[in-house]
Image (cartoon, rainbow, N blue to C red; front, top):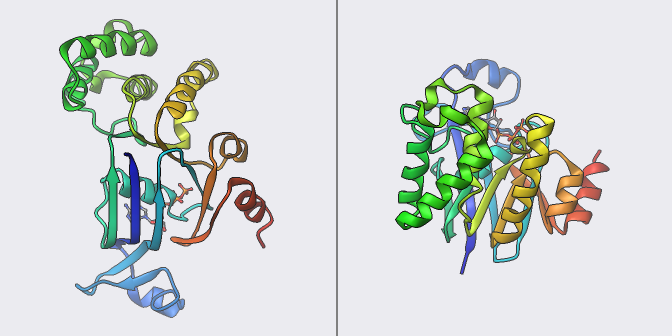
Length: 247
Ligand SMILES: Nc1ncnc2c1ncn2[C@@H]1O[C@H](COP(=O)(O)OP(=O)(O)OP(=O)(O)O)[C@@H](O)[C@H]1O
């Protein structure tokens, strides 16, 4: 059964260009601030701290919060891209990521080769891979670019291929950043229907968005992140209401 357990998660980033004296003078370094020293005495920014929650099948979690609150960092930690500095992240089930269009793509390979490789990693049969290939080719509509290296693609073409591929294989846990719902109007309309079937098919959804209407429509629980910490965790409407009326 799919599940997510996050316990006391802490993620920090070293600030190689950070000026510790300046931060200290501004009162920004030390207890109660976002900046600290790590064990090697480097100045670090605490992107996430003391983050704990569990998700079970049927949970549709939205992450909200202002710029720099830690939403992207949390999605990336769930995807296994960032290692926790403290605490733990446990995921049960297969993960589908709509986080970064180049994630998991080898830009030196063609679009078609990337599709086949992803299918093999996902443990699909030869026939299933052929089906995914047809499906992605039709949706991405890249014509002869399908057989050219991805480094020759425009950014819009890369988004179309990675979106089509990430939504062609149904995961247990779907992680999604809101900008995947951006793009030009024609693409958005086609993408929306495809996303809706993926969202309803996945056991667990974690979505980061600034759009309240998307949250209200797709999520049954929200976590409000503020300065890298959980400020509120509860049913969508209650958290949205508090977030929109924050002081
Ligand atoms: N690679 C990095 N190096 C240094 N600091 C980083 C890095 N990535 C994120 N941070 C810092 O971690 C904190 C959380 O950033 P994050 O991108 O997770 O926020 P966010 O909630 O997704 O913001 P936004 O809504 O603006 O995308 C910020 O203070 C940011 O400056």
